[in-house]
Length: 256
Image (spheres, rainbow, N blue to C red):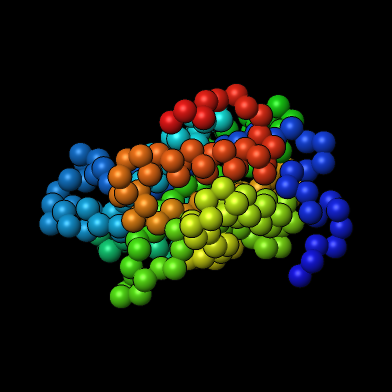
């Protein structure tokens, strides 16, 4: 469907200064010492794609470094608590932790989930105080094969199609990546839907389209396991194209 106005085709709000925020909710598979006994028999699960988004932390660090942007990251395994899920979501806790007493689960939320969300909120408020429109990139990765089915993309850009700025930004980012690296498979709202429960959806409820665009960047884990030079090139390409389509100020270094 064609966009109905020039305003909706903009990849940044007209006249707005744009600030980048980078987050990574599933950057590691670290188990805090207090819970080591709980995970003693789950080593293989921790080392699987369910325990960690392989490559996502490096991706987040790279994007933040390239643009001198604030970042909020976590290396605690999502099998303890999923920082990208809302409280009350059925997958906030994994099979390892969801059977804990309610008091123990509440304590996990208070100790890990709430501080992470507060850090994100603080960065959002700081950017808004600088009168910046926020481009938020939430870095994730996905397993190449799930339930026996091969995922048909290298890069996924997840967004809410009802948000004009997010939609225009992801279309432009996809096109820029395909021009720069034609062999790269880039799809929008795949392998997941951008409107699913998550940190970006939570922030959308508070922040209007004119000042917030929340995009989940999904990278195929097969790429993050490529030779280092190829993986480094992709990170540089993602940062370069994002800067051009989002009109980000050049305050960092493209060297990675």
